Image (cartoon, rainbow, N blue to C red; front, side, top):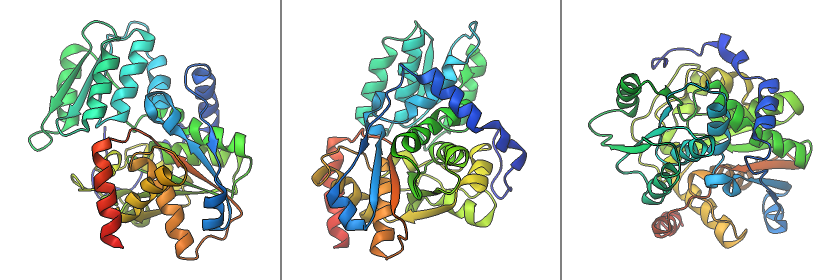
Length: 343
């Protein structure tokens, strides 16, 4: 069940995701998900004037943090489940497909026909190892919605819907990335986190509230897809439709029934970045830090660099979460064009 545009968050739902639930997810993921490394850069520290600890979820299985939430949710399904269904433009689709293959489940994945080819190909590859009947269903986002199509298929075939972000077990799994960052880096003053539907930023914020309450969590989304920022600022659910941002993982139309109250309760601040700032951050990862990061995954660094350029960085130790590294090589020329267009 989703909430409607203009509605306030249901704050009674914030207890659905707690630090204990994150720790339980961390135990379930141990030995299954990668404990991803923290990257350091003297050059970056000098650029922003503080110590930066970069959590590289680009080195997670499927190349994105999404595997954490997908596996955590699927591993908690009833043994008699007929299988799962999800809808996603890429990283969650791959994650559910791989988690299903790992657990021996049937999975039906709904993807838009304009999803990045690299992500569609990877999803098909994982589904080939899942239980019989697993398949990828493509749809035209201009003619139907993924939620409607997904509901029809799930009801017809008795599948359990595991949405990309708006599910307590998914959010708890995503939050283990932030929990690991704080465990490995120690206390931080602030963490910049990419935001699409809000699963990663809300999960990270719950982690910080539980282990480092003084740490500020700053969610970052594209200026062209600013629904979460407007929702945070107004206290009412705001939406966006098919935003033309290069950060395809942040094209989600709205925060969810669970993520909205969690963002309002635990996130310190939401901010937006321009397309050229996203492109510049993704290229900075590649050129200076030698990391391959997709545009959505670079949102956190884009936010940090924007604040540093504005002289608004009163911190000593900060974190940045890279949400994913599934960069389509064909997009690199677009990144260069966007960066050059501003300069």
